[in-house]
Image 1 (cartoon, rainbow, N blue to C red):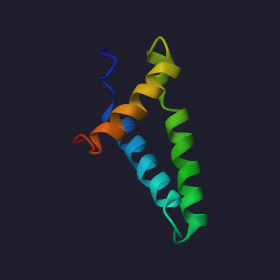
Image 2: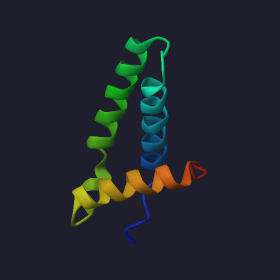
Image 3: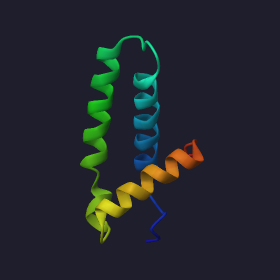
Length: 78
């Protein structure tokens, strides 16, 4: 498996996490409680994804996933 070959569901969760984080970081966000809860749920899904057990360095792979989803800004089709 290529280092940049992440499962589509994992990319989508990371993209949703980024969007939620950005919404929470915006000036005067609306419904911060809901955003924080969503961020927490997404964080758990990211952390517990089975993909991390298949890579030699999960820490490096997580960093790469964050960088790639920020750079692309779009989700691959599922």
